[in-house]
Image (cartoon, rainbow, N blue to C red; front, top):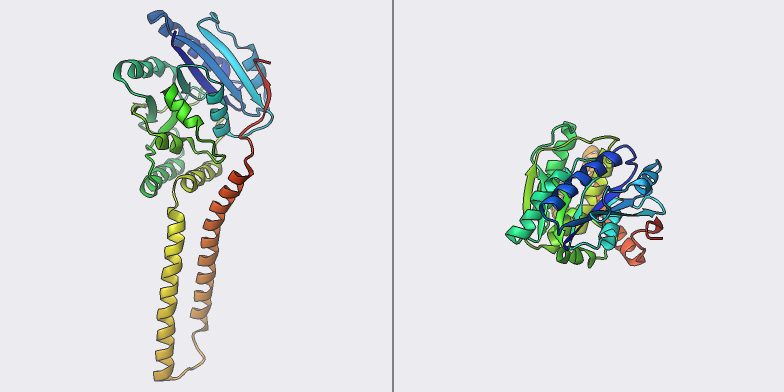
Length: 317
């Protein structure tokens, strides 16, 4: 019997979880009615929630547990969404694995169409992307589009603009993702790196059903830096090129100063321009050191080989 595992990372989703689970049950019931061989399991990952999320998850039970089973695990603290997705993949037992958010911005109603693509069209993965960003602040939307444009120019992986973490994958794709044990994870890049035959399913942006987003501008900015550093060495090349150009520019200035002193003498003048040059070079050096520091920091964290997450409780205990 085909089993679809639905991985749901949760952090402070006390209000939206009942709404999400009710819709997931309705979708599972509809798919089971059309194809009696399809069963579901929901794997909820509590990412160190500080509200009543875990209590709500513990109380969730489908009308027919044989059609939709509920399993969960709770982290010892907040380890981040990337760790929660990875933990859910490790816990999932299904032949097909889906990951989606609990705020209903990833509509469960798309699951039947996604499953049909995998079964009937021979794809390994069905990924979703938003065709618009209605409801988002204009500055955030602009920065997001620029990020996708930049990372696709400087990296070898294909990161689609508007891509969501909401996707349905075959077991071979999930096993490929689990084989990547890196500590600094950027799922959108990892999906592109593992490859496989993927079909994109566009849909209109959906607002949160309840609760508040856990992503602000600065957390998204840090996440974008993780993606760039994790899947491109272009910033290091840019730093090297900037250093080379600075050396060439400095050499030209030296020649100009020597020629000027030989032809016109060496009057005491030009200290403002000298101060500007010193400040520029100092800032450029700090920028290049900061870029190198980002890569060294990632390498440092990888060499520690710390686990991605620690589990405090699980439903199987």
